[in-house]
Image 1 (cartoon, rainbow, N blue to C red):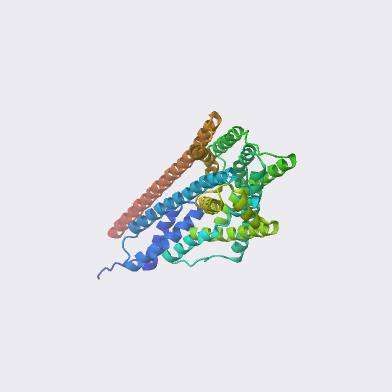
Image 2 (image 1 turned 45 degrees about the vertical axis):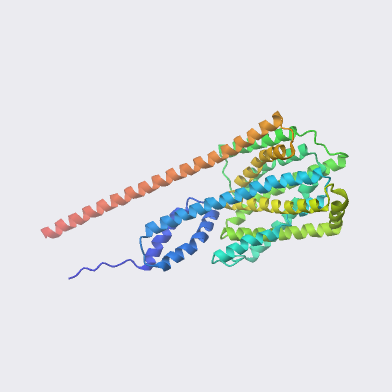
Length: 424
């Protein structure tokens, strides 16, 4: 009788391939795993079409490695957007106020009016992937995006009011509590674990912001009354609380999101809702006529420089918000808050380099604390990753040991069966 070897079925190979891919996804957060699946879907389809079953383990390893590199590249791009957007918007806002600009409505409107820029990455995803735009948008996701966009518009208005009324020192001091609020809301909403690196980073960065505020105590606006002070104070507190709530809420929603492209599409919907709110407010309060008057009569560099300043501010704020959304999706809300707060020290250095601001001892200490807090947080993440990799290796070793024991037992049973059969 001829012995025939049965080849594994394509379905079995596909199941094995999915098992290898799932093992590679386990090292990422659920949101990041969804993104990597969407990136690798087209590659898996192409490799299956190009022929044969091949060696599943080798192919899955190549795909997992590609996904990891792609994830890190995307993470770097989003942080660069956050970095460039935060620093540039800070410098442009100061440029705007230095040359006698001071409209609260302009400051509110520019934070969200750059939403058409998000159409470029959406079109890019549509061209280079098989996914259709706005796939996966349920009525619930759409309603949540619109609601959060409206709340984001209110947050922008509160931030603008606080920035226009309060001294720079007080505004920075109040906003420095945002990171602590984010830690608390992350614990409640997304069950963020409190570790020593987390707590140390929050305390150091908050202390850095307080020192920075104390170093700017002379920046008091002219004509600041007690009523305006309290209005600006409570507006800034409200803006800090709302943004601290916004970050973990978005992390919770992103856990149900299919891919990064959907994050960009949700951001587009939110920015449209925020822009609609700001536009209605500007139209009702005469904000557009105020922009025209300010460009012609108030801004001391002329209308052309005014509109260029407003235009570039629109772009930089959009980079900042999109970078924040990407960081929350790819990491956590707390990591996004830490990255934003750590950039306060970089904003100080930007003011020194661009505008020649005085760089005294308090600002130097504040900047060093920012760097220290951020580096300690990154080191904590690195140590957690190493610990997880070590546990994974130990788990794999234990599984291999169990398989070897089972194989040895099976071989031993087969040998005993052969002896019994031979004796019989």
